[in-house]
Length: 113
Length: 113
Image (cartoon, rainbow over all chains, first blue to last red; front, side, top):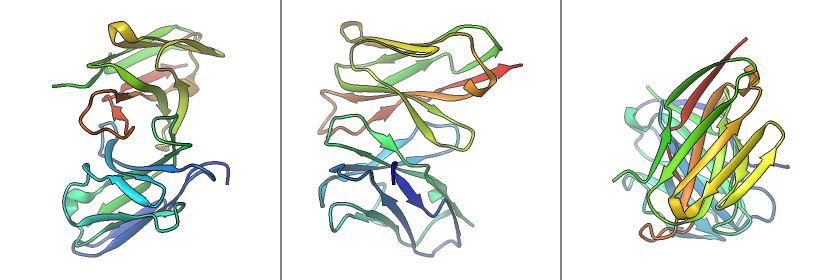
């Protein structure tokens, strides 16, 4: 596709459940970022991939959050034992390489009930 | 301290009016981007502008890197310009930054017909 694609668009899950959020970056982009946006706030950085490796995971809030990018393209953000405070919009962005213009997907709205 | 500060936080305009949004940042930047977040949550790229001036139709932006601010100008505003405008920066000396963007809190613009 032409842009960054995220699935699902919306996800409602029960507290304590496990969820996976998927990001399909723009073809050829080596840099991939995950952000989280709470209501009324700007997006906040979670993790950065350069190729297959997580080059910077300093924004992950705790060890319930994990992300992978096994083939250097699609990435999956995984959240274990979800809590109500995890409810937010999760955004994925990609760029041709690090420190170049970033393009965002439409986000996944996660609601933990 | 605050890394990226946007003003004003809220702005209401009559259709046809002009406006200026401001973004102050705390350090030298590798990258600065302006985004428009539409009512569906999509972040739309407006400008990639670490320095200088760019124009795109009714929108233009200027970044004065030495004075650590950027301005977004909207002329002849339309109702479709409504939404939240975010400034995001990749600060040159921010910890181990790998190019992740730091967002301001945004300016919420409402254009009335």
